[in-house]
Each structure stands twice: as C-alpha cells, then as structure tokens.
Length: 311
Image (tube, rainbow, N blue to C red; front, side, top):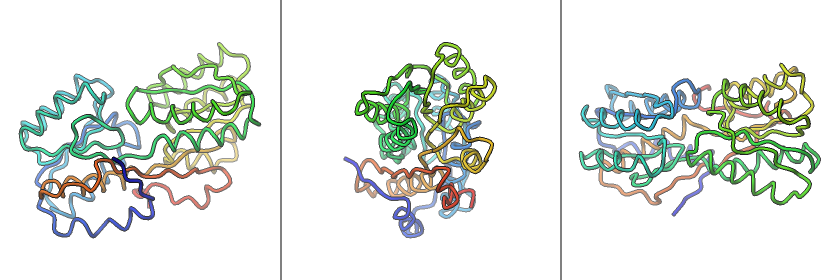
C-alpha cells in the first residue's frame, strides 16, 4: 500500500499529529553516511521533531558507511541502550531484517527513512521512481532526444534502484538514446562521482548526457568533466541539496542543469511522527508514505525554497 503526499501538503501534518504524543526518551538513527549532507539534514529533522515531544530526548545519529555488518552492530547498540524508536536507512532491504526483528522483539519501533526495509513498522521516503523519471526526462530533452548517455549508479539500496529504474524507463521511450554505462557504483559521494566519471570519460570518447543518482555524485562528475575538458554535456541528479542549489545558481557550472528535489528534514519529521503514533498504539493509515519530488533547474532555482533545514 502507498500514500503519495505533496511537500506542501505534508507541512499540514506537522504540528497536529504530535500534540498528544507519548514522551520519547531516546532515538537511534542509522544512515548511509554522516558525510552526506542529506543524512545530516535528516538527523536534524528527526531531532527537531523529537524535541517537540520531549526537549530532553537523547538522539544518537550514526553512519554505517554502507557496511552492513557495521549497521547490524549499530542496531544492536541501540537495543542495548534501550531506545524507544529507530529511524533506519537500511544498507540492504532484506539482509538487515533480522536486526529489525531483534529491535522489535525488544519493544522498539523501527521506521525506515529514504529507503525501504522488510519488516519495518512504517516507511517514509521520496517517490524515487518519479524523481528518476523527471530528472532523466529533462536530461534527454536537453540532449535533443538522442546521443550517448551514462547513469552514475550508487549503493544498491531501494532508493537508488528505484531512481535508476525510473530513468531507464524514460530511456526506453527514446530509441535514439544509447546507454553507455549504468552499473558503476560511485558510492553516492563526490569523491566517487569524480573517480568513476574520470574512468568513464577515459573509456568513452563521446558522452552526451549524465544522470547521477544523487547530488554529491553529480557534483563530483561535473568536477571530473571540467578537469578533463569535457564540458559539452549536461548532468542531472536527485536531492535538491544546498550544494546543488548553489551549483545551479553558479554561472560557471553550466554543465549541471537539474536536480529532482527531496526534503530530508521534513522526511525525518514525518518519520518521527509515525514512530510516536506507533508507540501510542496508532497504526499508520498506510505502510508507506511517499513524498513527491519536484524538478529544480537553472531556470527555476530562484523560486526553489530548498531543504526545510536551511530556511
């Protein structure tokens, strides 16, 4: 089951559903990497919402750095610490399920954020298929519906897989677009985007467009292109992060043309609300809350309000 919500509509939920919430004492948050601004904003959003319930709530946010063993240990540490709620950005939707079950057996609510996981009590994420679709459609429009395209992939979590699937669906409708590469994992990072893009540009003499699975990857790819004097193709991505917002406003970074927005701060607030409701015995109306993405381009970035946490 799913429920799609617009970001504007989501704001209406804030401030109403937590009023009668039970006090939280401790929350554990395990996300991909605390070096990624997206997850930093997510942790801030969770903290902000949790403190509305209990100003003295203890929030522990850690990155598992895409090491599943490390994430298992983090969940066990949360269990040992006796947290009330875990917000989980899972490294693998199936492999982490036993740890989810251990937490639930200890009376802890588990809410998946940004990426789905089997067995979670609830899930809040961006509509990643839609995000990949609108970002890639814009890219292919910029390419003139033809040419050689690259997808810079990332860690194989559901959010990344869904973005790539959305992108590939668009490509399938444009027979004159040739996909040169779609299986290279740039680790969802600027450094990874730089390294993988350098390798692909060395391998392919003609590239007409690049879709990156998130903004850090795209920014790294744009840097690689500039370093290698290959600035004749557009790049799009997903996140709507502050760095991407700045790049879209930068007249010297013309290669980066669009990003499909997310709002990790609001996503985490909604996830905490779902968790508080579950702690009070309130079952979510839907198992999955999907937040729609909007395309941010060089033309409309001036109207973009950015992530909630930056305003």
